[in-house]
Length: 71
Image 1 (tube, one colour):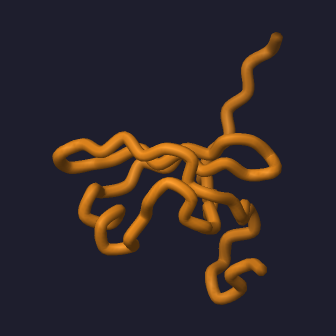
Image 2 (image 1 turned 90 degrees about the vertical axis):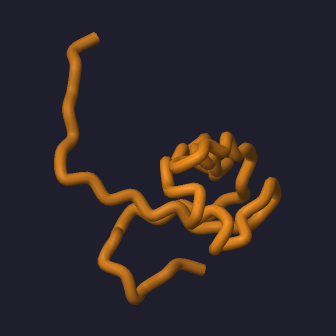
């Protein structure tokens, strides 16, 4: 299932693998079929969403810039 009411094409369904909670912001690692996606969101949002290890989520990726480096 994808969220279609949001105009974001890169949606990755996964489960929360880790949460590193800080006083203001937290890092949330989401394990997806494409790999780990890390989101930095407010700690308040983590609590309001009831996120915990194993929670099923959809990571929505929207970038305004993509940088490349030659290998």
